[in-house]
Amino acid sequence: MFAKTLRNPLFWLCLIGLALASVLPLWVSGYILGLLTVAYYFGVFSMAWDLLFGFAGEVNFGPTFLIGLGAYTSGILNGHGVGIPLCLLAGTVAAVIGGLVLALPALRVRGPYFGLTTVVAVLILQNLIVVFADTTGGEIGLTVPDVISIDAATNYWIALGFMGVSGLVLYAIAVSPVGLILQASGQDPVEAGALGFNVAKHKLAAFCVSAVFSGLAGALFVFYMGTASVGTLVDVSVGVQVIIGAVLGGRRTIVGGVLGAVFLIAAGELLRPLGSLSTFVVSAAALAVILFVPSGLLGILTRQGRHA
Image (cartoon, rainbow, N blue to C red; front, side):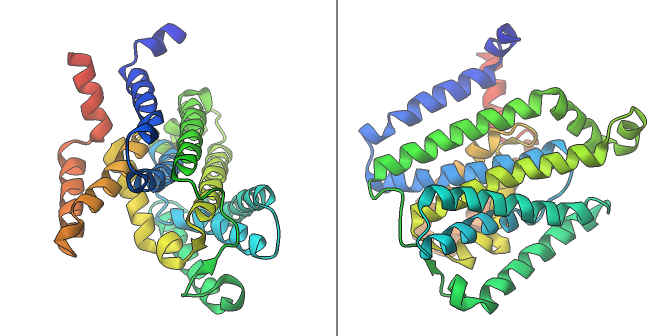
């Protein structure tokens, strides 16, 4: 198994990428580190989404429901004097509980109805945030009293370390027997059930794992930004960005979500002088990759690695 891993170009690409990323604070500005910190958290969002869609085959159009639960639970508790570690734990638990409440009825339906259920969940969460504005900050946003650090390099290394650990755990699950069962369930649930696999149980487990990393990443992101708002964490457009990042990087690869997220954040920032046109250019580029390179950006890199 270890020898097979060493022969995998993806392993070396990830190792080289992490090594280069770990030394960036030594020679790049705090501004660039800030952009990459945001990209790494979005990379975790995309990796968690890919486990549910790429392997379990369930189209989750509302990843920000889990992210928002983790973020707002942590932020609200911190505003009441709870320490950051307990807030992170509470945010993660809230995302898992919310994920269970959503997944148990949603997994009973098939086709596009699961995706529609997740979109409705996001809209309900948005309305709750607005209705309970005294607690959540409403449309203005929630200000978090504490932050993890004010040092750009420290925040960067925390995000990088969290992303690396998340990618390792999620990838290990994906290539394990559980991941193979999820993949079989996503491709043909009837046949997988006929082989004796409990399809609903494995998909529910995948949803819970996705909720753990989405909720924790959302909570950490709040304590990095120092604020939480619907537009930056819960809005449907944010969920679309998470989904595009996962598909753009490479569906069913897990770690490709990081590459897609970094590309989207970096391209959006480089094209900022174009104004509103920048969104169109980035979206067009992402669409071109998705249509003409189904394996995504990671597929391009690994293919080049095999030819080298």
